Length: 139
Image 1 (tube, one colour):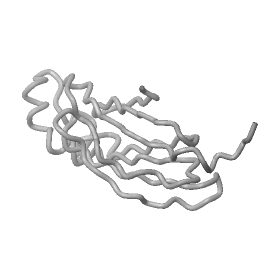
Image 2 (cartoon, one colour):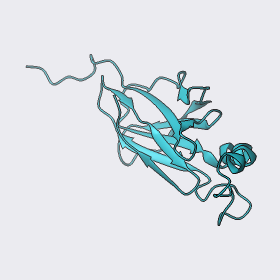
Image 3 (cartoon, one colour):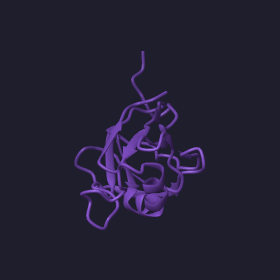
């Protein structure tokens, strides 16, 4: 049995963002993708996208061969600033900028780093609200 992994296809990544404060997909969240080959290697920016009306990024760049770690960077501050007035109206008892100063989000960006293996697909959803977030490996 051979352990040569060079014949395996490269890994792929997808994501989507759900705004749990309003129970809807988060449209317009900028997402960038970076990768590295080994724990000590430098990160290489591969590009990015933005979430669509369904909260999904369907056009993230492919991962290069040899990728062992991936980082997804979500620009959440811009998203929450654009939604601030709508959220305040939808949640009259919970002002959109409560305790968050003028930024509109306690976490202005979210960086998720995870390990990958050749030939696997990784779907990494982000559940987001102005004061917290959660991620998991989806399917």
